[in-house]
Image 1 (cartoon, helix red, strand yellow):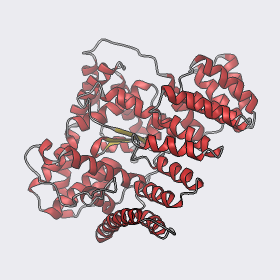
Image 2 (cartoon, one colour; image 1 turned 45 degrees about the vertical axis):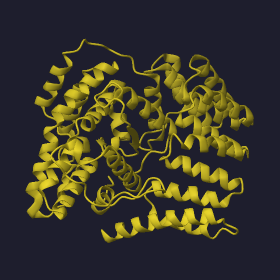
Image 3 (cartoon, one colour; image 1 turned 180 degrees about the horizontal axis):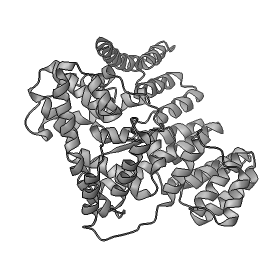
Image 4 (cartoon, helix red, strand yellow; image 1 turned 90 degrees about the vertical axis):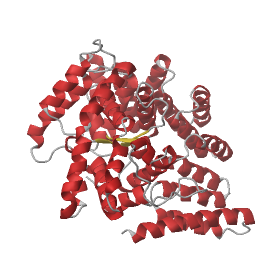
Length: 484
């Protein structure tokens, strides 16, 4: 498993540059006081989270699937609005890694590994993991780590913070390895403090599950399965068990808490089933399920969810070039669920393959009228418009959507492509620079802006704006290199 490097996490935590071109993040340690909430303003924590996310993208394979992102964000919103963190902004993302792991970072950034999602057996189990991580944020467990560092010298505080950050992302053992032997006890004490909050995160998370309408027993069920898995994993435990240790006492506590709520057996949302389909189809470790086998499963009624199995069949038919059959099946699914982005995007792609590109564009346009905030629909519409040479349409849609998704690299990449095809190379390089910046690639971001500055006939205003942004990125690059 790839891990975040200590110096990059230090850069994210202590020397981060701006998300937006207008301002820079203070690189000094915050004024550490006695109250966790007073140590870092919401604005400073947001900037720290944005810098943290850039480091994650640079060092981890963040999954670039807008439909997966849509579902995870919707599930996360359902949980957060029923949690102690209601009203706070969260960002849920998926890392393409077979490890069983999840973590909460600063600024409400919560990451889940594909391996964990594939391991869950119900939507309530996946919701339980997210509710637990949301609780770490709402109970200020991460900010309390800064409070513990308040009495240390700045070098020691920096090492401790880096160790905690590595523990959050890659397991506490990696965090300990980043510290010198003389500081190991101090860091171990902090990590133990973090683990002591696991029970609180379980309790608060189960409350959230109940309020959101999920099965409150799902947390204990998932932990029990993970605990039994230790016998299989032996010395190589899943990362989730390293950073979130589980024992029989913790499982019993979770069951006891769940028993305080009326028992309910919610049905898994169809989108959860479709999520599992998408992840299975992209998992190269798994053998491909043939069209014939999927058809046989449907005929014999041997499936977990009929619509999800038909969706998988439609995707497989399209991959095999059987687009007419895929079209018929997807139209049937859309008759049943015309609102689902998964079905809409799949049918639009099939329509385009069948030479009905304008019909596909109109389908996506109609869907956006009722779901304007859908990440998947916005990107699918822009991509389809670009494919048809309708560059102004793509630019207009993406520019509007950028106000709602200003920190997603995929939006900037599509916008750079659309506006470049429309003939505005200056803006294309600027958007491409932000794409690389959000992915943590400072050198490439700087190069794109330097190229933009050489655009013939560049205006004074554009030149000044690019120079200002270049200055910010160069200062951040200098700070990062000084810590390597």
